[in-house]
Length: 272
Image (cartoon, rainbow, N blue to C red):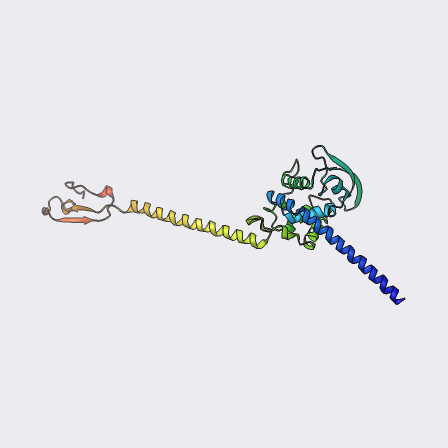
């Protein structure tokens, strides 16, 4: 009896181990297959590759859903693509959070990359009435990939838990490694964003200081032109009364910084 029980447990364990390994293989194969096009398209459109990969995983069940296998639609985007579409059952949520099934028309793509590009186009161009509808998912607006994923919860899907599901997938499969170095304002890390802001402020302050010094120097030069009058040597006789003893020709008075209009030419009399 004990031997039989051990055999059963070993068999169950082997099955579970094989199931886990099989799932891991499906997940890694899917991620590796879509990694290059998702990274390329995401960077071209200033989106987070990790979020787009998480969307593809959740929406297509690692490429195993009928929509992805029959229509190359990895993001559950509805409508038609170049006139092609498929109609399928889909689960939706009401405004009160109640789940229900309904039939809908979904885009049919010629390839996985076409689906990826169309998803990026949707996120970058929004809806007909609001081109910035998905703006909070852009790397220029979302500080982290987590923020971008949460922004999709209120815009992309009717499932209010959509953002949490995406973030759980990002963490489980370490998808942030796909983001890499996407540039100054799009790295998705608060530290890098803060560093960029600090550098920008330093640059701005440096420019302001240089401008202030230049303005002060210019103002000083202007004041000098106004207040510094030429030194003028005026004969002393000009300042003496009419009947006073004549001043010798070589006797002069040095008048410094007199306003020009008050300098009296030689030979003019001084009013008493």
